[in-house]
Amino acid sequence: MKDIIAKAVEGGWNFHKKFNIEDNAKITYSGNTTSWYGSNSGGLIYPESFIFSHDFCIVFWGREFVCKNCGRAREYEECSLHDLGRAEAWQYHGNLMFLSEDRIKYLEGFLE
Ligand SMILES: [Zn+2]
Image (cartoon, rainbow, N blue to C red; front, side):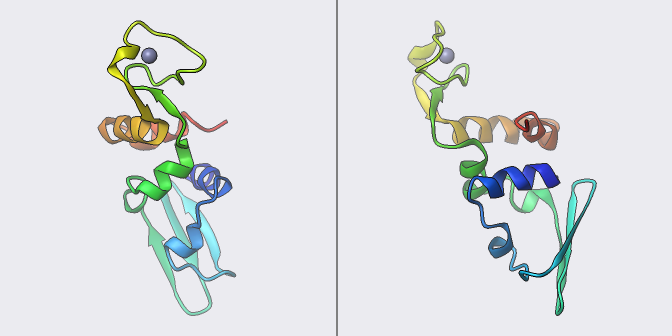
């Protein structure tokens, strides 16, 4: 979970602001759960509370157009079903993640 969040933050996602986390809070990761402890408060964050949000998906996968059939960027690859049209990468992969049996695993597939 740490790496998934880090990738989104690298893309410009404001994780602290999203969950009202104090700037100096201590953040810990355990399994898929993220905890934070600030001077006045703290909280538990579950993946379901952000992985379906548009803001997260956009920074995680980007807005490049990809083929609706195969998910590859049009500019680089051709497939015989490109006629299905195109979608932005975050929409294409967000849908597949939603339908995945293991959504976290799907997200982890995009980490380097
Ligand atoms: Zn294609």
